[in-house]
Image (cartoon, rainbow, N blue to C red; front, side, top):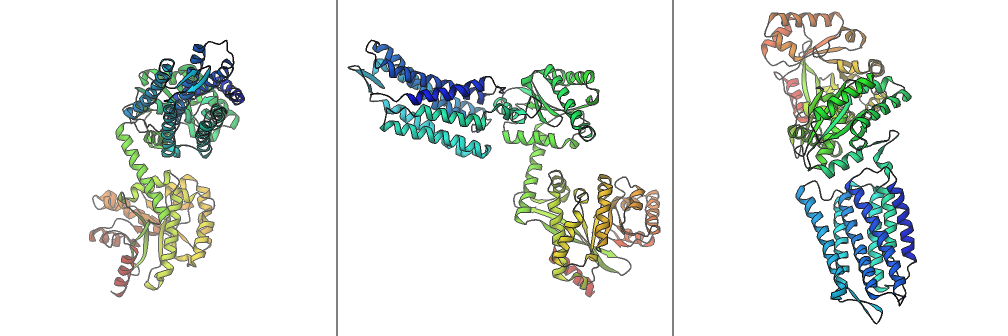
Length: 631
């Protein structure tokens, strides 16, 4: 039989090109890269041996034992290609997980399969199981189908792993692996019926090109413009070594945000590259990863305090005075976790929430990880609630002393998750703020209040206005007023019934933008309150510069006033000052009649607290207002 070996030549050409580019590129040395390299070598060897066998079979002077060796080596390398591809799929999809038993089991499966293939084919000159030569002709043995069965099982297993863990890959990567699998399966089936067509290795080489383009490009593992390995390379290292003992030290200058704002793009680039060069010299290129901005990770297998922290401080002090004050986060392996998703989420949490960690050096413990897990679950609960409409708005009545009516109420967000149960606003609101969801939450509350007011004609029940909290992020949105006015216009609500609560923190974040938003909303009829007065800086400048009508006195001031005379004096003079400035006051946290008597004696305008009512669901709030109106 004359084989059509030109496809093997094409396979060698394609694979050699990718091999050379790959070898001379700046690839991070991970297990995935190693398996990909082994896959290419196997493809090259198999194609070369297939071509050689095509010529030696036609030469009557070539001894039979030479043909046996060439054919046996070809079959071994050809079948090893499928096994290396299985290992590659396993590695690139993280299908084996980080569990030590799973990782070992998968490797043992592949090694045992390759050993069986090598023995089965290697002994065939004596057993004739796989092939033999008769009258100078090549003949397949009775057990040849075993090789196809092994190939089929390995490919099916690869397909199963691929489909189970494909969510870790991009669409292009999924297409590349799917094409590789389809091409190899199709070529093997074709060769069963037309053995002279040597298509399988050509299909493998085409798949190799796609894998390189989608998964193995060196640029995918390099941080843009810095020549340092990036977060993808970092997580690959963690995945492959997490069952070993080492430490990750995440390094970030304490003034990174300040530098980012103050330095020009050119100076910023020089600062980053200088720091990277220092780290490369100190710890070696393969142990340094550029995670984000001025945030880096260093891998050490020694004492992190001695090996990384002291050396980093020394390097930065000698070479880069601007960034000499560092913060270090230590992640110990393997005791931290064996779950890749948890590790990834923890690292991202450390990178994007530096304000949560105030110590210069801190270690992430399993306990810290559990806390991070809770935050992630709460975050997912908020996302579910927003997408499924599960957030609820409660209303806490506010008593007006002048009219003796509950003329107002504060709208308060509540979340009752099907998995976590009731989640306190004190827990989920900070999580929503840190993850950019608070604007959606705030607009949900605003829209719900407008709808509730119009649907139930609250003005006819004696309610003058509803207080709605604005988050800091909402306050510094340049288009805040436009967005809120659009919602009010859609419902046709009287804007005078909307009172927006802001905090001193929001004013400090971006005073100019917030003031502009306030002026725009006041221009259409809305009013503002300053919430939690007494808990922040209590800067008198805010009271003078912000056009607020109402100041809400934090409950801590009232409670302390009930305990000692000095605090009582502070409360009395605070209320008098607000009145002298032409502002009305709301006392929060009113829980006893004694508190009411004190507030009444000093002329507080509104009372809010559990003495009158807890926050109520909409239906209960309506019943409360109707009952009190009748009374």
